[in-house]
Length: 228
Image 1 (cartoon, helix red, strand yellow):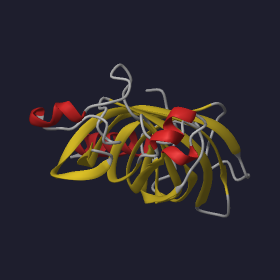
Image 2 (cartoon, rainbow, N blue to C red):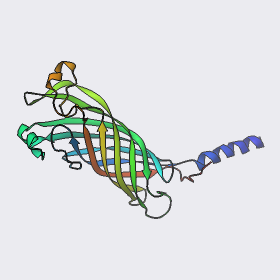
Image 3 (tube, rainbow, N blue to C red):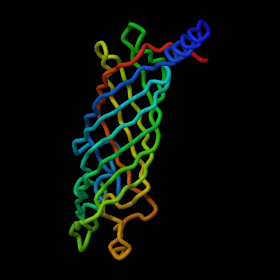
Image 4 (cartoon, rainbow, N blue to C red):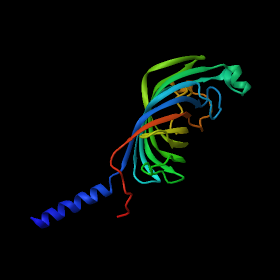
């Protein structure tokens, strides 16, 4: 019985020593698209974006992270610096739902139990999948195919975060998404029967950018960040 008690206490000790802190919260900001229609400014949000975010702080320097974000993506040739696009004067809007997961790396230790206000820049990358409507242009008129597609992508974000008040972390982030599709802007129809309506640079896929803030609430056991 004594040995069993020692074993149970040892298992509990190992579990507690590896317990980590969690964060859950919201993302609020804007979005813009970089594609064959509209302006090509890197950071130029023109539509509202919002969603939820979760982090598991595996150590003081990295976290596993997942998010789900919603937004409309809008492109207007009239806002482009390219005279050819201005003359064409296309315009599109497409709704998007993105699910992303990956790892966040901090430049400095981010120990939420230090007892002090702390801040650090960070990088985030991973994989994403986004659902968007299938659209195309027919004689300059935006047309909905009546279907939607899921497209994989690679999110790449740079941000800075800081403890705000007890239990809250505030972050500011800009994140570009490289997608494996050229159909978000309507330049490449999803249906093979509509490929005659394809236009633009067939060698470049679509990008979109989220710029915004995160506000997360922290909870969980105090970690010791043990190495064993």
